[in-house]
Every structure is written in structure tokens, then in C-alpha cells.
Length: 390
Image (cartoon, rainbow, N blue to C red):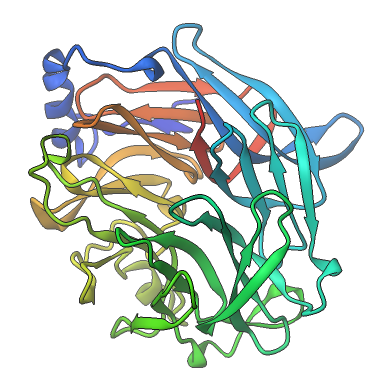
């Protein structure tokens, strides 16, 4: 393994003191570790080189086996184009959605086999998928983010989880919606990216950018609220809910919605020195830290320890941790080349780490354990998201 491809924050690095302290604390790891201590199975999307042919796109199942120190491909389904967001479903399978401008979606069973496809050219509206899907509280419906390619207007389609057929549709009150999440009440949170697109998915008219967070009624699509940041060039794409401290004891505070920001300013220095995290507390949308450590671009975001978040910042090849205990700081927890996909790795309700996908393999970070890195089983490039399914 090339150390330039995988460098955990250590005493030899500028931000090393923080990680050194967490390593010393690993002796206090509680005994109630769960099954995923030995390994985890993840639903993921990746592109893989083919001998004597062009690389192909896949969705499927990857097994990270800590004891055997290897990653195995358990299932690989070839798909028509790059996949992006994934959603686990009740039967142990998952749904994968094509990246923007997406033309397909597929539901797979627990073994990674395709059981239902959706082709967007079969629908009269002529819209494209924006790479993400989420489920209603009861699992009876799926919500997909979509865009009309000419106007840029965003839509949410309500779909049957078995057939994937559309049963309703609502505007998102914005341009280019991306990730969808439910709040504690079951309302739908939509990240409107706000970017107009030209042919070939190229960004255009950045001065007209209008990124916003919208809350919709999950039954009617009624707009319940809409929030914007003061800086109109801070793009809202990906979101995650925090795990408040004390959740297992019933003493938890209110969960925060963390939002990974992507700066679209024309000036390079302004882009690189902008914040990468926004927070929504149910009433206001704000940037808690103005730290430039993320290079102005965050890809994925997941709940981290201490009621905070971990963000992947691929332009600086780093994963950063934010904690409400130090709201102005963004702390390096790992340096990984092209770090992208993140998944919360919970040993218990009170002990959370993160799995990080990168150019060369998967990293495992936990604040009370020594870090682990496993190389990919071949030349494969993981996409921006993955989820633990077993």
C-alpha cells in the first residue's frame, strides 16, 4: 500500500494531536460490540476496468472482512450508466438510482440480483432522475428527486416500492433537487441544488444559482418551509441527521440536519476557502464553521460521534469531523486519496465510527479504535455513496 494514498491523521501531521488522543482511548471500548465488528456488507456503486474493453458501471454488494483483511465483491450487477444514491429496503435488498441526468433505477434483492427496473423514457413527462431516493416512514412509498431537462424545475415523484411506478408528483419549489430525507415527523426534506444545466449536464448561468432546503408534506406535497443560506453560491446537495448524545438513554437533544456544501464561486480562492458544512435545527439554516479545511467542496456526509458529523472532502483528500462541542472547528480524522462514500459504522448506539471509500480501498475510523485500511480487490472506482446492509 502506498502511504501517499492512505494517511491517517497522526502525530506527524499538523492535526495529529486529536487523533493521537482518540487512539489512547481505545482501551475503554465497551464490550457490547455488535455483529459488524467482524465485518460488514455494503451496497455500493462502482466503475471497474475490463480486460481488453471499456470500463463498466456496476451496483452490488461488497464485503469488508476485518479478520481476513480483505474486501470481496459478493454481487455485481452491470448497469447502463453511473449509479449514485442507494437505499436499503425491508427485505434486505436495496434500490440504486442513476446519477444525474439519470435514465434508470433498479431494485435488487438481498443477493444483489435485479428484481425490478425503471426506465425513465417510459414516462411521459420527460424528466431525468437526480441520483437519490428515500422511503416513506411506513415503507409504502418511494420518493425520487427529478428534474425537467429544459426548465431545470425540480420534482418529487411518489412511487410504488415494488413496481417503481409513479402514483403522484409534486414540485420541489426549486431547481435541480438532489438528496431527499425524512425528518422526525415524516415530512420530506429536499435539497435543491439550484444549478441550471446546459446540454451535457454542464453548469450554466451560475449568477442565477438558487440553492435551498425545502420541507414538504409527505402526503400532499404542500410546502411547509423553505430556507436559503446568505451566500447564494453555496450549493446544497447531500444531507444527514445527527445522532444526538444520550440517544440510547432517552436523554438525547434535538437532532441536527447536516448539509454538505459545494461552493460554486467564480473565484478559485473564494471557492477553496469557503465552508463545507451547514446545519438546520428546524428553524434556521446556518454555517457553524468558516474553516477552509475542506477546500470548499464536501461530497458525502454522515452522522459522527459526539452528536456531530463526518464529511468527505475529496478535493483536499480528507475526511473532516465536526462536533457541537467545538462548533467552529473542522478536524481531520483521515487523509485518503479521492475520499468519497461514507457510511456510519456503529458498534453500539453510543459508539459510532465511519467507513470511508477512497481511490484505493476502504478505511475504517472509530474514535476509540485503531484505524484499518483494506485495499479494493482490483481496479475499481467507487462512487460517492454506499450503505451498510448487513
